[in-house]
Amino acid sequence: MANQDDQFKKVISHAKEYGYVFQSSEIYDGLSAVYDYAQNGVELKKNIRDYWWKAMVQMHENIVGLDAAIFMHPTTWKASGHVDAFNDPLIDNKDSKKRYRADVLIEDYCAKIEAKIDKEVAKAAKRFGDAFNKEEFLSTNGRVVGYQEKIDGILARMGKSLGEENLADVKALIEELEIADPLTGSRNWTDVKQFNLMFGTKLGASADSAMDLYLRPETAQGIFVNFLNVQKTGRMKIPFGIAQTGKAFRNEIVARQFIFRMREFEQMEMQFFVKPGTQKEWYEEWKQTRLKWHLSLGMGADNYRFHDHDKLAHYADAAADIEFKFPFGFKELEGIHSRTDFDLSQHEKHSGKKLQYFDHEENKSYVPYVVETSIGLDRMFLAVFSNSLVEEELENNTTRTVLKLPAVLAPVKAAILPLVKKDGLPEVARKIVEELKWDFNVVYDEKDAVGRRYRRQDANGTPFCITVDHDTLEDNMVTIRHRDTMEQTRVKIEDLHDIIKQEVDVRTWLMKM
Ligand code: ATP
Image (cartoon, rainbow, N blue to C red; front, side, top):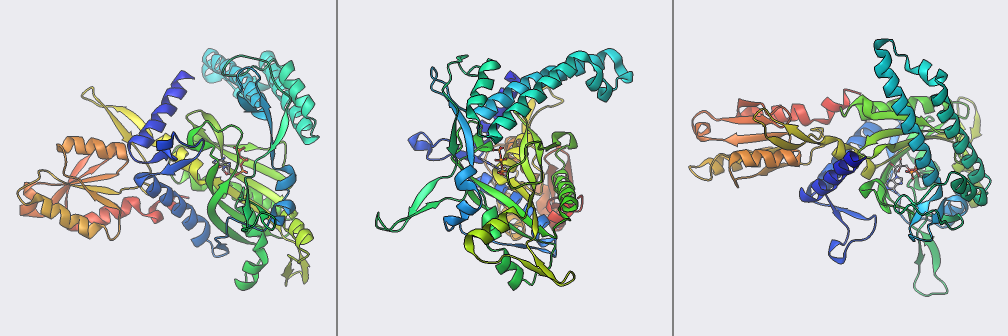
């Protein structure tokens, strides 16, 4: 645990030190769970967004984009169920005055039991060696089966109580399990209350005529209310998708995990409209397609897993998360949800407007079913950033800090370095910058010894350093150094463009899907 905490702290401080993420309004001591993206962060975030947009929109003939407003007519949120049901159960500790999500306290309790299972598995794997069969062990070892039954029992009871709004039982469960405040150990809890996560605001000048609005808690509804406009004007045929990226706002009860859980964040969502009855196939298809997108970035297949939901939201007939191994363990990175015809039907009901598709093959109209893929851009940023930050032991017994960002996402693709600040080398380096900057984000750096400049670019995540030396003046060749291997080769200036392009091009990466 201590190790995980240390690693996470390193991620946060590196993000600040290298101009990736700052706390919002830091000079006023910050605003809780709100963050700003700095000079490098804004580029990395944009590159992740572009990588998603290319794969999800431009590479699909039947998916188009949208940029809906953050403000929406308030009835939207009545229809979607957010006004009545977008709640989290909160509980306060009377001694520490700390606030928690009741369901998260219970889930964390279960995670501890799961850790015990993992320990038993590791022990047995060691004992039995090659003959170890994990599946068999999990289903036959008495102690492990007991642990698993306990977890299942707790989660089933919590799911049932939350589903029935029986908050007294959620509290009873916390008390029965003797769950204590993780910070202080106190078990002096208040009752559990529901808390709506939407931020409210007002539209209009005078107090009495002002209209109550919400900041959107998800981008999906902007897509649903535009479904027919897009379908008609784009002459879209089912199955088809509408995608958008944009800000969403949630008044999260507990937000202590850097950009993992923010109050203002960005989503990248795609709603795929399908013929009723085909949603299961599409759901499976999108689960696989989205996983492939993640794997194309080469961050390690072991770092991803699916988590199928047992307890479904009111609108879904199937749902799964793609979980990623963050520094604090496996957590949700993306959700894939089969949302049935819930949203469109609700908007039909509340608006009195038909939101149906006329299917020429079937010769009838119907409300399409929807399969959604929804990923948090900031969470993806954290996944990429935390996974890339490594401390490497070098052969000469020193260490280097290197941010091994997938080159396609790296904010700066190449740094151009004159070996010394004189003898005409800066001029040649500047000329290379002028040429490359048309196609790539590159920087010029002449400060400090070249070794220090290399280290700086390593820590910054720059895939290439290009050094201009005295020989360059004679032979028009430069040294190109690769961040991950530290390998250096001598290449012609005129070949630089193609060498960089090969490594950072979206095509190269997406072809791996
Ligand atoms: P969680 O269970 O972590 O609260 P959720 O299931 O409520 O997430 P969704 O409503 O499915 O999340 O939202 C889709 C995606 O948006 C999530 O997979 C996540 O990547 C991102 N997301 C949701 N809430 C936040 C937040 N507060 N900060 C950053 N990203 C978020």
